[in-house]
Amino acid sequence: MRKIKLLFLALIQFSIFAISFEARVLYIHDGDTMTVYSDFLGKKKNIRMLGIDTPEVDFNGSTQGQIALDARDYLRKLVPIGSTVVIDLGRDGDLNTRRLLGTVLYEGQDINLEMLKSGLAVPYFIEPFDKEIMYEYMAISKKVFLEEIGIYALNVQLPYEFRMSVQNRIGTNYVGDLETKILYSPEDGHMVPPYRRLFIRSFERAKQLGYKLFSK
Image (cartoon, rainbow, N blue to C red; front, top):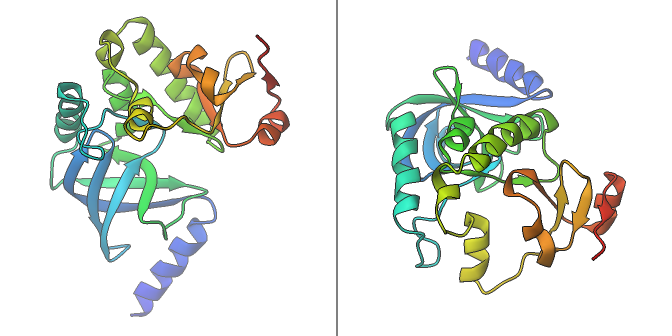
């Protein structure tokens, strides 16, 4: 019991810098979501993969079809059911949410990044976001976008745009261009290449980050 308490204290101290833990993969829902079991948590938990978005297998009864199944199946290939992975929640990770948002690591690979390389996932950056990870993911996504790999070779909506259309909604986040530092309204966000989009919740926050509003 004393050893367990000491280990727990060590984990709590470590969490000041980052939260990460081992987990066993139980089920893969689609290309960016899985269910795991962790002894550290003592329960099952859904993991939403940080910084990426994949086509929807089933969203409110609507689907993006074969490309969504391809993304799901590719993730299942990268991380077979029963595998032990590391879930990295970063320094700002929250263990108390319904779904945990994090990076999946398996056999030394960043699986989130591997999904981007395949073209079966697109980058999905919502501020605040770790700059080091964001620019690494952006560089890979630019290459995939320019080479028209995966989803970029098809005439399909980006996953987050698909969800909005199913709900008959327009996004509320401003869209910052990570290269030009120009800020676009939610309606004009499509003007920014997908790999350069940073979603920012308010105009005031965008100004703090140094973005300037696009003028037509």
